[in-house]
Amino acid sequence: MPARAIAPNVSTIPHHIAIVMDGNGRWATKRFLPRVAGHKKGVDALRACVTHCGERGVKVLTVFAFSSENWNRPPEEVSGLMELLAVALSREVPHLKGEGVRIQFVGDRSALSEKVRAGLLQAEAATASNTRLVFNVCFNYGGRWDIAQAAARLAARGEAITEQSIDESMALAHVPDPDLLIRTGGEKRLSNFLLWQAAYAELYFSDKLWPEFDAAALDAAIADYAQRERRFGKTSQQVQPVAKKAA
Ligand code: FPP
Image (cartoon, rainbow, N blue to C red; front, side, top):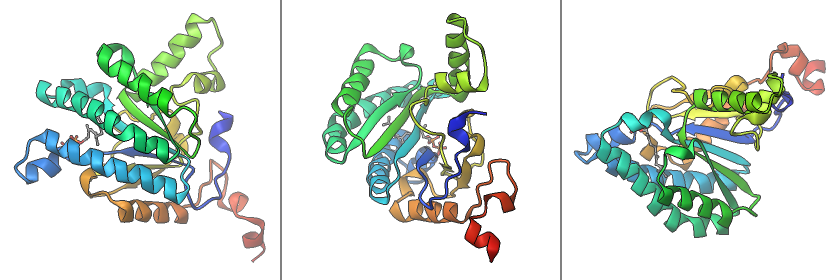
């Protein structure tokens, strides 16, 4: 079993939060706006979420911004998302630097334009020395892609395939597994997000559409997480703190 996944988290604040930011399109459609307007509003919600995670002491935030399957959306929505990424990066990187946020992009960059790829590298380099919050943006990412690329890398190097070697070759090997995985927008599925890393994540589903998911909603998710008992395959008795066992 990968060592990173089993350290019990006794903190009430999740070290690592992962989010499927669903519902931008519905938010826009309800207002008779183009879908891209929902994604724009989604960037604002994401901005506030990053700040709030930093303030709450969350150390890693990982979001699903563009999935391997999102290429199948209408071309104007795909190009709108690419454009939004470029605009958001040029606007937000200085603020991220100020807030001690290190941004890292996770996913298959080979299909992205040279301009987008350069923007990602620039944002990563500009924030590389920050340590308060690691902000992973999954872009052209899929959980199956991640497992396959890890296995392919190991095979190319002639290395043994074990849980640990796969774990160390995954795209998120630089951070511990997520403790809390949030999905907004009312759907209850993973949609190919962090299939490997979410093995022990606590799942939290919100009916709020992503543009409406504000600081209070994030606090509610964190409060819900604080009530969960994380057993990592053990019994309830085994994971209770000693004081509680004696009571
Ligand atoms: C899912 O909502 C959301 C996405 C596919 C994109 C998420 C992106 C952002 C929040 C903006 C951040 C992105 C960048 C580029 C920085 P949906 O469109 O599937 O909503 P629906 O289910 O209501 O149609």
